[in-house]
Length: 481
Image (cartoon, rainbow, N blue to C red):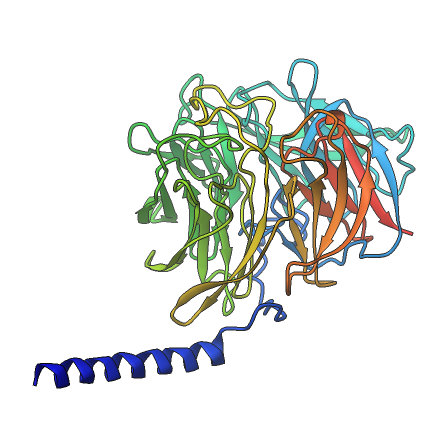
């Protein structure tokens, strides 16, 4: 009797496995399958053009652009030697590029206005520039272009600024502060805004390194809430029609603005590990949260946690905060300081474990171990009806936040050449990756050595198909010949 009962259970288990296998065969594409781009989220009416108005492309921080890039043919290279690190490259509907850079001398955040139609190399320069009050290392890094092509940023004096640009009677360009909101009543002295995004109702959300989340309503009034003691926000924030996502060093939150105040929709803890990893700038997730999805364009929100020794992709339902899946990704040991790329039912993750950042924010604590080889690696994970699964992984050593073009079907990034144990003499190459199978389709060499380190910064695909990449000393422009 007992033997027959076991046998029956075994048959039942086998039946379940067969059914699950058949289901996965129907809904889970095999490795190398073309990804499903899905619809994008509806355009945020308070942002500039889709794909070019935030560091990560859009309000949802998808790192996806509808614009085609330079492709896999021959490329030409030009440079803008601004003697600054340039992590934020944006393009408005007037086709001008606005760059938010940090000067090498004094680490002063500086806004640059650039005409992409003008010659760049060898004497590329900005049309106009404006120095901001200096804040923390990550303060004044994240900004966006609004629907009037104005740069929205918070400076080191805790002022929310909107920068317009225009030409004077003599034809010279200038950058001017069109509006100002004082956040000093919401942001404590010594704290700095690290994340900034508008929601679909025109409220401007912000988060600070010290753990304050707030929103400036359309009347210019700031509302703020403090996160639990010890929680910091060291990455940018994202918004969708459902709410605003904030990833602290302990948890992922979604907030909304209702009845004239901030409301917490949900909070989900994640595994932050036992210490900061080498190749990360904080002890916790390195992700700006990514909204994506196959139905609305923001069905899900994803981060990569700091689980050790192997990081995990965490995906949640936007509306409820319910977990979709938790899946180990990248190498062992591994981690990521980059925001995931998300589109349709696919997420792309790039590893940064061991990347040699020259400086980290104050107070983030030592990395354990203090340093490690930079092995990199990328992976594509697809969401399916019963969770998620890895479609492919590769050993590409991405040295920038990858940018996916749905306009031409390529995944663009910069890779670090040389041995896993990095040196200041390492080279860099522009790379084109096939998102279907993770294969490296094309590489073009870039200027080598540490002065052209792309430092895991985001690239920009412009409306003419050029790829702009910030480095520690300026901007490189890659153009199809």
